[in-house]
Length: 385
Image (tube, rainbow, N blue to C red; front, side, top):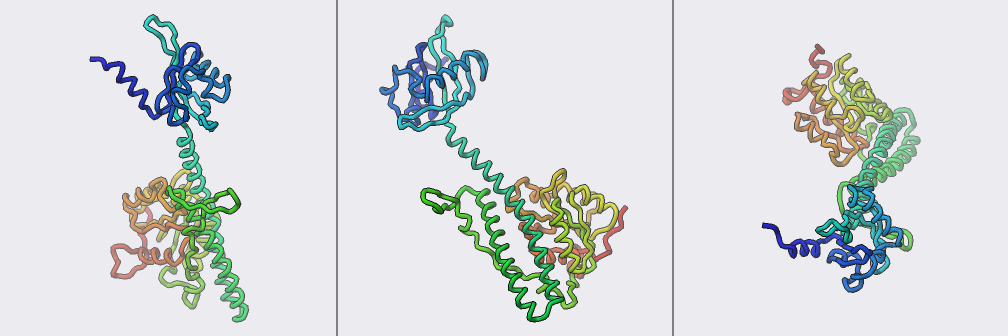
């Protein structure tokens, strides 16, 4: 049984979208509640008026009708998602996407047209926020890598000064190092705040100039206390016996991160080899034995998960630590790795906390008896096939 005509009229009338119908002369004959809510005109103000009233110009109205007749954006006689602008009663210009068709009577004679217009303001705002969020995450990642290099290099420089300078010089130089570390920590906290904002939907604003609001990146972005440096925590001979002697593969597509992290590990008594891609890492792993692999998560060609799975296939007992500059697992690399058996943990922040890295390495590579099932003795990993 066909539905009565009044049913469809009610659907059109109550639609939240703008629905406008015109006769052959271009006069408005139907104007729904969605149009009233969005444009501000009452039905009495527009019915019988030319549809150009809703456009910024007569040419803009004609352009939509021309696209409909020519089939520029759909079959002839129709239009789909034709972007244009409506003008509200208060003068506001509203971007819309119109889909519609020419209407005909039972004999096929043209009697007018009807259009369904979607208000694009919220859609475009959401699209902009998504784009800005992606930009913020990418920017934060790109900033975190240089911060990693700066932090690692500062640790190496401080260790060098402590070994070579006089006591009086050490006091002065350490104060300088701590000042730089505090500023780096502030940058790192702000970068973390940017990533939190990109992953969430709430943020605070502050007025920096009259009439100008900016996102308050300092809200909740208190710089963390500086972690103890490698120089301050190393054993008297400059080595940390718990990880000394290990051979570790460092994988990151940023050469600076690779080199600085590898040098820190060398200062702890490790042999560190670098690879700037997952493919390079697989080639290195095929040539020699490693006690552990430290790999970035997001890399071109092959990410941290793919590298972990390849290494797991080739050397099932080789521990892999994943490190990332992202605050959330954007591509589910970490989640997939954990589901596949990754047990070493993840370093979620760059700059890397060296003490935490050493702890994870110690847990999975130390030969202490109470953890025989988890740990590997330096230099005693299974031979390559």
